[in-house]
Image 1 (cartoon, one colour):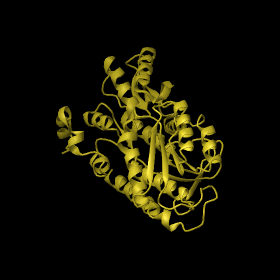
Image 2: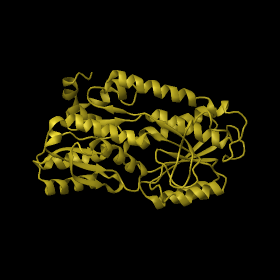
Image 3: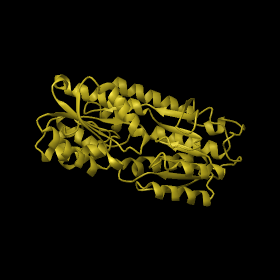
Length: 366
């Protein structure tokens, strides 16, 4: 696993280095979708989807703000708003950003379809839009995220590994993310490509708004329908939902079955340490945030994205969007040191605080 983590880190460094300085290196060729050329005194609108998932306030926002400052000699300003999982609120926030004449928008959409009209409003006002983490519909100028089908495959492969021979006899529950999130569909597709034909899927849910309480309720329904002795594992699309699922499993007296996750949230990592959760998917947020900031600054300054985005993706409404997809790694108790600790996401003291110390000692996390 150390080799895998090093390989991921090397890949991350390569993309990061390709991005670094690219706002300066891309020259004076104005991008056809960009605004008129500007200097470092730019205003970047940042719209994140919710604050229930720890990553957005702990990682994404401060990382993007830091990188924008770095790229603009501390002259660039980030104007921030969080939609708190409300698509209508996010549309209003875009309108406000347009009124306030930001130079570029970074948008992580609550609802990829519902945001399309607001993206067009921004474009009509001459404001380029970077889709962040989720591929929003509408005339998007650039996109950065993780390879979402690979995320689902990584989760599915880990679950099958944990199940071993039990995959032949029992049933699993699949707890997918929200149907309004295009990433959730890609996670699900990737997971199914690995799980189908290898294990019986007893129940499957698209979890409204990714909420842990909805995952908890769905899991209770699955246990009631299938019987607690028939469930051998749970595919959970993220760590927040895994927490709700594990609460339902505990309440039903079900223990020692593998549950997957994603985002490497602190609570998720701590559950991995104790054995309640089998794995999470570690996504290098610093790299994703840096690329988004690089794209936004270049677009605001009317510069080409050619030196940043080497790939293209299609959305349902827009073709050949310049994009950067960041690699991910499966996080288990065996490689916590080589991933979230090595990259400075958490310290050992944060993970092993209080009641988690004994479990950390048991797996040699010190």
